[in-house]
Length: 197
Ligand code: GAR
Image (cartoon, rainbow, N blue to C red):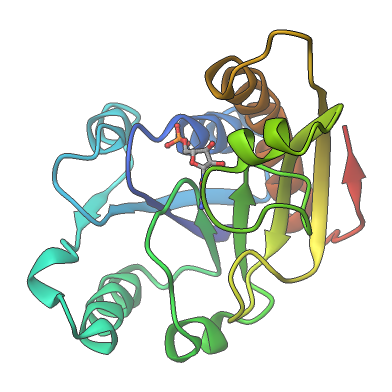
């Protein structure tokens, strides 16, 4: 039996596309069962539909000030497809312990920094500001603390002279596209050993 994989996105969903493509390429222990966005304008929704994956939207805006209700709506969409694994892929809403706890050990996130460095936003600008010569991305298991939790994989990206946050982000994203599918492929097969690219 394949592991059923749901993916949460907020934007263009380029990481989601790479995960779905890898699962659909055969010889993978996971299958994509849902792509969910927190806004109907997320560009990744159309891409998921084109790849034949079911989509759902739970707009966070009507839930302003009531995060538990937003999270209950997210969980209700998940309950319809009974996923075994939940991948956050550029999902830009913070999830509270109430949502995260039942997914303990089953929810992955990709973050554009070498965690534990630069949790939160603006990771590329912060790496440049600090004068780092190495930057990168991390896939980790999600725990209630933001961008925390056991690390499953990391890919390094050298910082080059003249890099801007944008040029660095582009090169980090290219590594994200290699790292996340590699980690999910192993994770779905029951292997949680660390991957370094
Ligand atoms: C990626 O760089 C991802 O690491 C980042 O958003 C981008 C999403 O791109 N995630 C975060 O910053 C999470 N806090 P995508 O929609 O093209 O996959």
